[in-house]
Image (cartoon, rainbow, N blue to C red):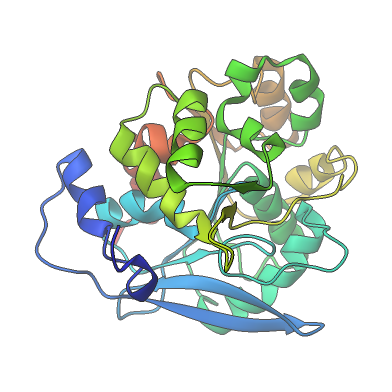
Length: 299
């Protein structure tokens, strides 16, 4: 991990090697930022030399690097965004990072960097944000891929065990930690099915060392953003083709939620990735990549 602060892309070869992708050298990728109003800036990773064809929005308490393996496997120009309050993006004074507020900010980012993308892909909080984006900026969302979330997600969480919630339980952990390895151990316990190299890399992208030597998460704590159920109306009103991808081992989307998704959007496509938990991009990146290729327009 030496030198990470000088080159956050130094770990990309690990991503490729972990899933058997050929490595021909460092890809073209750089960090960009956008003023979104109120003195706030949103950061993102711009992949490739051509205009992005795919936009990626991560889940709560994640960051743009969660998509690294998928973007490498997909091989298309892309924009992976750090949602407000996450990664390298600014934190909001009111700590409201719900889908509605986040979508308002992301509109400016898409207009600046990816106004003609073929698809917006969002997981969990990013998925809800994508649903809202399709409603308020349909010209920017030509296709929407929603990963392991529906507007009924808040109904599922109270009955889920800590094991079923997986790494989402980390948002309830301490604010600071004495060592980096302490966070790695905590994360590994929440995701015992993932390789340790995967865990360490993800933690490195999602933490930072404070001036006092302690470590902290690279995301703000989110206040309760209220009910997400009103987003069902946005699903029904979406003009863009919708795809819902579920993790086969995830409890975040129940069968009745998928059925409601199809009732609201009869033309939507629903896929299940066997064995995957909530973060399909981490648990089954190549399977997810194949589904994304199928959802994109043919060249």
